[in-house]
Length: 486
Image 1 (cartoon, rainbow, N blue to C red):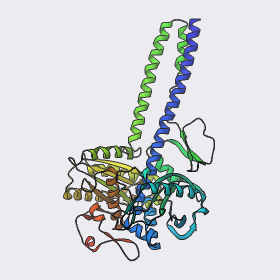
Image 2 (image 1 turned 90 degrees about the horizontal axis):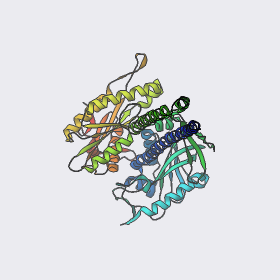
Image 3 (image 1 turned 45 degrees about the vertical axis):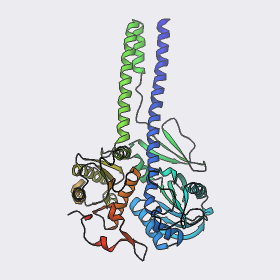
């Protein structure tokens, strides 16, 4: 009887342990996915800031509507950040312009023609009123420095153009207050990325989930790991699902032999249980270690990912001003052409090769991170003198100019654009340093790519009569602070 009771108990313990292990593994993966998704939504808003937080945008998108400036701004969000859909919505609830890939359509139509946008518009108006401040000559907005995007922007999922998409929406606001906002609801800039193979690839770049996909408008989730997606109105839009990477170690092959052994000796049973518990503990520890590594590293290159970048950046900011450092934003030029010409496998080779080259160029004083797609960021804690950073930037740009061998004896010719923000000179918060290094990178792209720019020079941009950003006459002259590698 004792052997029978013990055997049944072991069977029950084995069943419970297997179920608990499986559920814990699924919960860990779902938590990692939610973190990656939230980070991607915040990234959309941070990319919008280049256009939305600008005195020039207030003048040409709110005060005096300028179609040429609209097209230039939308083209920046499409070509630089690959935003699938961009819309400009007036405070009165009219769609003033919308993009279809690289084409911008300037038209005034009521937002009611797209009911999904009405909920976003109402939430954006309420959030704007919480952040609006009165200034001489009109209204302004609370500072974005140090603020989480969720404090001033609306983010989430929406069904647009017949497709599910992730979106970020924020008001057009001044940055230097040479312009002010009129009374009334805000003019809103909305950017969306369709949930397609491109977005799935970006989301899964650091997670590396097996059979990762999205099912639109389904109410079934199954027992595996998943993430339900709803719009702001609560309607179900679909579900992300994947195959669990961590499979609980089966206890049955061990328990059954142990039960047989119990018929001979209860002592052998005790030894077998203790041994298996030790094995299970080791397996769970190894799984947890793997999950921690995956959470902080990019699976394609082995570099630090965006989560680790954010943690190290916050830590570095806390040591200011005693320990200055630089945030260097790097973006590959003509990378899309590599994927289109040679395929995504060749694109992966280019990404891995550039990761090795950047790590070699930066050396021990810096942390090289891949933050998604063809973007890299460097936290450089070495010498942040102007001359030292110019030498480093030239080395980075030169690394991008070297041809990359790919399969079948072919080579890919790309390039690298670099933007530099120095702490605490250019900012003393993580959000501000990222924004300003991105602004410097934007200048490098506008100057013709394959070059580096310091944030200070990005402030010397002017607008031509056609509404397109150009350099002022002073910046056009050759200078060491903004230029190609020599």
